[in-house]
Amino acid sequence: MREYILVFAVALAATYAATPMVRRLAIRIGAITPVRDRDVHSTPIPRLGGVAILIGFLTAVAVGGRLPHLHCLIRSEAGFCGPSGGGTEIRGIVVGAVIVTLVGAIDDLREMDWLTKLAGQIIAAGAMAYSGVQLLSLPILGVTVLPAPVLMVVTVVIVLVTTNAVNFIDGLDGLAAGIVGIAALAFFIYVYGLSHSYNPPNVFSTATFVSAATLGCCVGFLPHNFHPARLFMGDAGALLLGLLLAASTIAFVGNVDPAVEVEGNAQLATYLPIVLPLAVMMIPLLDMTLAVIRRTRRGQSPWSPDAQHLQHQMLRIGHSHPGAVLMLYLWAAIIAFGAVSLAYVQGPIPLLTIGVAILAALWLTGRLPKWLESRRL
Image (cartoon, rainbow, N blue to C red):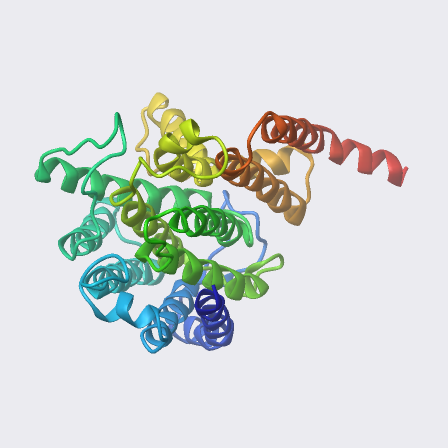
């Protein structure tokens, strides 16, 4: 755990330190978000924050490669610390991260058409898959092994869905970074805990390392990005964070042993490798799904921008800008940590706790603005 804490701290510090420099660069080269009808900010804000997040992640990889236990994961050949190591996967994730950040940065400077941007994401996903970050099997009905071409396609699709889901939710200051940070933390807790159940226990895996580094990057970027934001992450950041989440998910799901039982609800834990990635990304996935349905019903492209995302609906209810962000954080945390608790805590207590939390979140979402307004009168 100490090495993961160090990875988290290094990613946090490097991202935090790099962000002001990237902000100055963005202003100098003209990477500035104009005020558009669908936006909630009233003044132009520089973007390109994804470059700072990439610097934080690459620094965490460099430091991790020098640590006593993680060096075998980063410098060797498999997805875990064992006889064969894990560096090929990490190198593939680094290559994919650089590619997708470059694609997003170009889009932040001069907007690409959606097809070119999609092609860049496919290249990044393909680079990761080629290096070994791909599904080897699915934990369905035991272990289901599908043909290699099918698994490759599924891997690329997961990356595309996750990157675009994070991009869709990036509409308020601090929203995407916070939700991805919550998702990374929940995922880290589950994967690290499950790793202790292996025989022999092995907590050093690609999924755990990437989750810890992603969490550090998000926490380091948030002080500069929370309302009022001094720098937006832009497509460079949204696509990068989505790719890192997808990488940890794929590295975990493709190698999990469904026969391993955790301390809590063992039957549920069998399906958690599939359920948990969906749970931790529920808010971005829901927002993307609703946006695609909404736009296709109008006869528009699914990538056509509008001002009807979940964050915009929260503002219409009456929440302030930071209040809407915090409410969406709450929903993300309830879903993500609720799913993890179901695997580790026996009995009805997790379900009761989740139920109470959901009722409280529903009240806060719908009634808090009116209650606060009544207190002011």
